[in-house]
Amino acid sequence: MKKQAALFIVISLCSGCAITGKSPQGNLVQRYAASRQLEQADEMLEKGDKAGAVKALHAVVSAPAAPGVTDQALFRLALLTLKPGLERPASAQAQQLLKRLAREYPKSPWTAQADHLNDLIEVADDLRRQNKSLKGNNQSLTKEVNDLNKNLERLKQLDQELEKSAR
Image 1 (cartoon, one colour):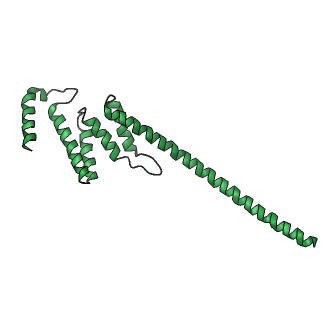
Image 2 (cartoon, rainbow, N blue to C red):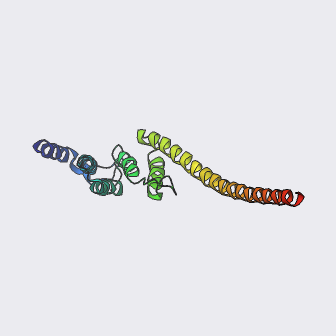
């Protein structure tokens, strides 16, 4: 903790008036705060506090951009909010976070991983649609088989009646 406080003081002293300026990379204090929240999210996940980690990651992605931190937080928050199910392979929130990551941080290594995740989500969505279509086909074929079985039973009964009447 003392190390972190000393680091914060050194960063504050070194940054001087630069803190008040707007840099495209975000200032050091914002970057430090975002990375600290990212670490807290890690700690919460280790303790099993998923809701707390989601809250901490949401704070990072809602704050001013800090490349190297915000992009990682976007990816990890998307993973935590995927919520796959039978109706959809990923939640709309997770998909939006992945799209934001690709849009705002195209050269990030997290974007490359998000691309693979998006591909998997698309494949899962295609498989879900195919499954739905196949279930419909299966139901219609089952009905057709049942109808054919009924017709076969009727034909057997007619055949038996013809045999009885021929005797």
